[in-house]
Amino acid sequence: MSDAESTALVRERDTAGESLATALLAVAALGFLAGWAALFQWLDEGSAHLGVGLVQWLGVCLVVLGVGLAALGPAARLGFADATPSPSAGVPVAVVYGLLWSAGGGAVGVLLFGAGPLWLPLALAAGAAGSGVALFAREDLGATLPAAAVLVSAGAAVTAGPIGPGWTWDPAWSSAVFPGSELAPALVVAGSLLGAWVAAKARDGFGAQGRETGARVLVGTVVFGTLGVLALLIGFIVANGLDAVLTGVSPTGGRLTVPVVGVALPWIEVPFLTNVTGGLFVEVPGVLPAVVGTLWLVAGAVAFAVPLGVGAAVFLTEYAERGRFTQVVEVATSGLWSTPSIVFGLFGLAFLVPRISGGNSILVGQLVLGFMLLPLVLITSREALKSVPDEYRDASAALGVSKWQTIRSAVLPAAMPGTITGIILGVGRIAGETAPLLLVFGGAPYPDSTPDVLGSFELTARPPFVTNEALLSPASALPYQLYSTITAGVFPKEAFTNQEFGWGTALVLLLVVIGLYAIGVASRLYFRRKLHE
Image 1 (cartoon, rainbow, N blue to C red):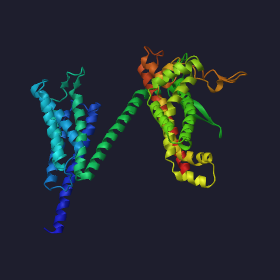
Image 2: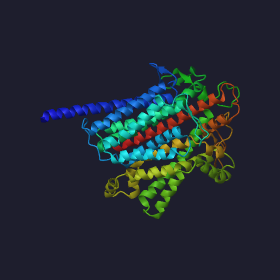
Image 3: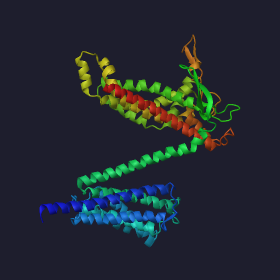
Image 4: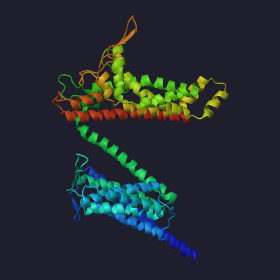
C-alpha cells in the first residue's frame, strides 16, 4: 500500500472515530440537560414521546452512550481509529471505576440476596474487577469498557428495570424516601458526565492529550452546571419577588424637574422601595428603612475595615521582616476570616454593646461587620502588594524617592485592583449577614422612619465632643427584616402576605448586593485603566 493510500485510510479512520466520539458528546449533553430539566420538573416524567415515556428516553441516552463507548475502545485497539493510548488508564481512573462497579455490584447483590451479608462480597468483587480492567488493560480498553458497562447497566435499569417514576427507595440506614422520579434523572445526569468525560478522551486519541481534553470537558460541564444552578436561584428569587416589588408602581407617579432646561418629566414611582414598612395608613408597605439601614451598615464597615486592612497589609509587606510575627498574623487572619459570623456577633454583644451604646445600635453593627470584613481585606491586600513587581520599587528608589512615597505613588496604585477585589467579596458577605445583626443591631423589624444619621450629628462641650443619636440607636436592615418576616406569625399589613413580602425583600436585598458589586467592579476597572495609562 502506498503512502498516499495509507494516509487517506488513516484520515478516514480518524474521521470515523472523531465523528462517533462527537456524536456521543452530543448525546451526553442532551442527557445532561434533559436530566436537569426533569429534576426541576420542567419536563413531566410521566409524559410520553413517540409512545415511550420520558424516563425511558433518559435511560436510552445512557444505553446509547454505553454502546458507543464499547465500540470506541475496541476500534482504537484494533487500529480502526487513530489513538496513542497509555499502557494503563491510571490509578485515579481505576479508583473511580472501582467505586462505580462496587455500587453496581452491591445493588445487584441486594436485588438477588436481599439486605443480608451476601451483597458485600459481590460489591467487593465487582469493584476489584472494574479497577483491574482500568489498571491493567491498555487505556483505550481500560477507559471505555468499564464505563460502558456502568452506563449500559444504569440505562437498562432506568429503561426497563426497577428504577422508574413509580418506584421508591427507602434505605434502612435512613428515614428518607427517594422516589424514582428523582433518582432516575439524577442517575442520567451523573451517567452523562461519565460518558462525556470518556468520549472526550477518546475523541483526542487518549494519552496525555485525551486526558487533558477529558478533564477540560468534565470541569467545564461542572462549572456550567454550577453557574446554571446559580442563575436558576437568581431567577427563582426574581420570579417570586417581582410582583411584590412592582405592586403599586406608577410610571407617572411624580414629576422630576430637570434643572438645566426647567422641564418636568414623569418618573417611575416604586412604593415598595420608597415607602416605610410600619407607618400608619400605608397602602403598600415598603422596605426603605431597611435599605437605608443596610447601606449605612456596609458604609460604616468599609470605612472601618479598609483603612486598617490596607494599612496593616502595607506594614506587613513593605516594612516588617519576614519571620515568626508575620506568620502568626497570617494564621490569625485566615482563622478570623473562617470564623462563623455568630461568634463576631457574640463578641459585639459582650464587649462592644456595654461600652458604646448600652444596647443594639447601628454603630455597633458597623463595627462588628467591619471586624468580619477586616481579615479578608488584609489577606487580599497583602497578596496584591506581593504581586507588584519589584521593578516598580527599584525604579522609584533609583530616582531618589523615599520609601513611603514609592509605596503611595507606585506600589499601592498597582495593587489597587486586587485590593478592590477583596473588598467586593467581603462586602457581598457582610451585606447579607443576619446572625450578628440579631444580637447587636436590630430594633423594630418594621420601623416607620429611616435612620437620619447625617442629620443627627451634634457638637458638645464634653468628650467625645461629637454625638449622634441615630448611630447609637437600633435600626432595621434587609437581612434582619427578611428573617423577621419569615419567622413572624402574621405580617401587620394586609397588602401582602408574609411570603409575598419576604420574597420582595429578598429580591431587593439581591439587587442591593448586585449594586454594591457593580460599584466595586467599576472601581476596579477604573484603577486598572489608570494603571495602564
